[in-house]
Length: 496
Image 1 (tube, rainbow, N blue to C red):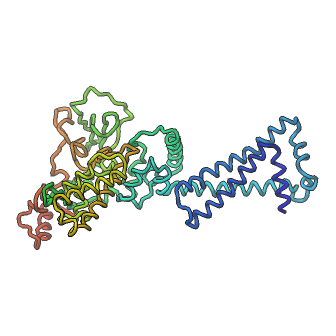
Image 2 (spheres, helix red, strand yellow):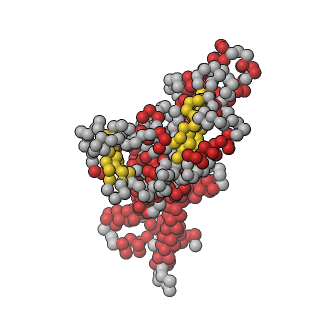
Image 3 (spheres, helix red, strand yellow):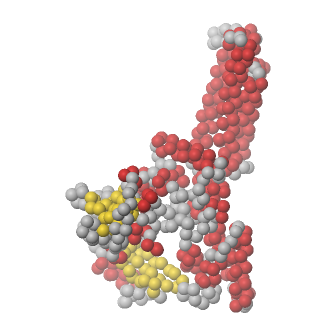
């Protein structure tokens, strides 16, 4: 049996081209099987090994198979013989002899064809499954995707596969993603990509196919309390509280409109922005009860023309544009770590010094780690030397935390620095909500879009020393009951 198959292999390897094809196909097959065994057993886990296993060697295998008939055609052209004459020359009479089930040559050919089809089918399925894993998306092109991979792993959606948002469902979405992925590979290979990589909001599937698989308008009701803590740059890093009651209703009931009114099925908001960047609006339209649209035009940009295709219907990612790959503001990043206890609040001037440490100019991550460490140690050695003994563990933990903050948010090779990727959630520095809710977007009689703060939230404290400044009767003991009465009076229905 083995001799028959070896004779077949020698028979189709008719010249150098055929032999090259046979060697390439056979070796690629063997190496892929070997690498797959190493991956399954956990010996090799690198994304590059996956690329070799599921992309490179299957491709080489196909190339090898293609070279074999090319070798036959070249040999046929060189010798001037017919295909039948070549077959009779390459194979013995026993192999060509007909039986009830055909010749041994035909049977062998069918067996090899079947094996090849099975191999290519399994390889293709494994490749598609592997390319849908987050580890492939984040580490296969490490230098390029390192920023996205770093932020993804600490994001609220770290258990959601990348393809669930970036690809979506259906054959059309799959084909589009593979075409886009091919261009990305070409861009990486020939260094054609932008640095930093633009946020791919224009390539994301519609929110109703992605976000609303888990978050849908009916889920947003009542109100939610959010307390934001900022710390001063004084010696005690004094905390200041801003406490908001966020109105998250979708607005299906009269008088219940809240933040998610913008995406409720009953409403429709359309807009066009400068250069289609979604940062500064040219106009905004809101659907009225009679089905018509009321337009608010930006009086600062009435001379700018736009393409009709640039019109967009508002959905989740217009505000939640950094739902997963969240790059932090340095001040808020430090506040967050102090609030979580990762940075000891009792260290003198820790807010000021931590902020200074991570916003200095660096050239590499190794240099950044060293300077962040030296910055804090030098400060406490020069000003509070006793703390190097009594608070050494707290200082070391603060250093490690700040190094992690910096390495997660800053990526030199991709030109990712503080503030490169703005977050439209909220209304910092005139962005977010204020892109539409401002005095420049006016209707035909000059009335602007409403921008009253209480449309979306009630303010219980604003940069105050206590979390509930505006609830004068609240104490630590009765805070919950007072809050309950406050919310009951202000909202028809609520949830905490």
